[in-house]
Length: 396
Ligand code: SF4
Image (cartoon, rainbow, N blue to C red):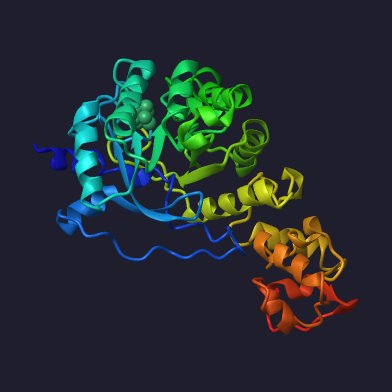
């Protein structure tokens, strides 16, 4: 097998990793984003390229082609949902750090990819596997002088000095928590330890951020921290997932939680478990952005008695129907906190409204439509100069 074939093998299941997906949940709502167009020219056949090259949008909004892959698909763990679990009949492949770095360097030179998201199955323990990921990133940065985007996965049980080293090499670090707490994780991954192995490396990131000045890190910035959950894999509720998400946002400044709706994989212990409706992912993203950016608290979210979000309704709209329909917000006097609670008004729209208001009153829905807001969606919940406004949009 040549290096490119190995890469195709190793990347074949990376759609399971949602981190860095270009397709942004529509809940990033009201702030519009443009999708990247086209791929760079490339010397591989299209079907090979598709296996590992993913259009991705970086936290700064830049669109790149990201190489998403594993360093090794051999794994000694036996997580119930995973195609790489130990003992499953699956063709394994492994790169040595310098082999991968050399291949990546060539691909980068040819314009095929501009960044890398590197994870791995575990062999010889999480610490040893982490060292290999770190060695790879170090070759890319120090020997090859690569200055582009690196997202490194932190392995279960990574040590603090490894996390520090990773922070000096990468733009983003992630630990997949998979489940929201110890009890739920046991239903998904019997040999992963929630607090000691998974949560602790995420906490190290924040502890190191507080201890060390930013100039010590890659490009003079602290890398961001993200995680991923297998939504519905452990029969957990949305409330459980969002409680943990909110804790992470508040306590370790988590940049983002990714949710991957459970999908059964053949020849795993969960192969007969029903797939989770992808709409659940979407509602979880919407709710997590409300918690992170829109000053919502968990108790504001419209959980059903079984502690899940309704699949059929947008959580922000559901909140507004209960709280704003009879107490609409005056657009010309509301502060930012009030504006961003209104459906149809995102963070950018609220800023624009506040700016425009310094010199002009906003007198009509037509004027509001020009300000990067979904005015018809907002209409039932607002006043303009003390008056309700007519909207063409149906509320229900
Ligand atoms: S440790 Fe990772 S690669 Fe290994 S079985 Fe679990 S999820 Fe899969």
